[in-house]
Length: 215
Image 1 (cartoon, helix red, strand yellow):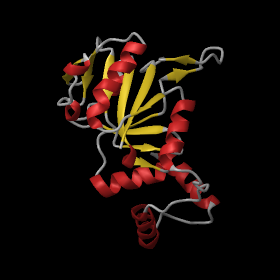
Image 2: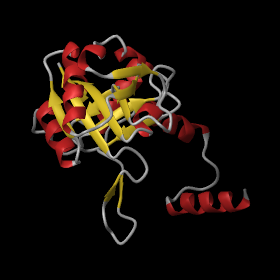
Image 3: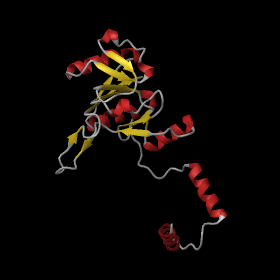
Image 4: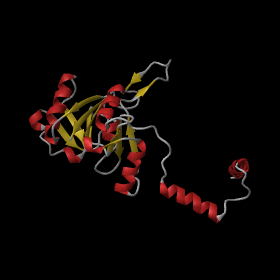
């Protein structure tokens, strides 16, 4: 604690402040945090869906567009067959009632285990600026379904694509109020370049990410 107080005291001294923060200073800080002010951002001179599609492709994520939610199983089946992948998957419960059997896919609604090769999820929202998926953990949205399988397929509604990270956090605060246990951001397949700066996909998560865009 002595080291902590020493560090904080030096910071306050560098700011031209003396002693511990008073009540007015603490109130100003609390008000600032509750207001969630946005800092300067570059202009978003693009359409959200088109920008998102462009960015996910740049991140080695494949993307498909379908006319409605009912068309998702067929699109997923085509993707799996084209890449010679397993026709068995786990999914979030909200997608279990889709016509998976008719598309030739065996699907179970549960959290993924180490032996599961394909995981199908939704997304709380998607960020156009960076091509990122925002996923919230919860009983019906287990994080393991997107993290453990070699292939992660995400169903994304076009109306849930927001321009920026700030907009994503704002949407979460307005719709949920409280934060979930975990918020995961997915920007393409897992990757690392730790060894000799050679990019390797699937280092600590899915080898591939596929997005199915629905209206």
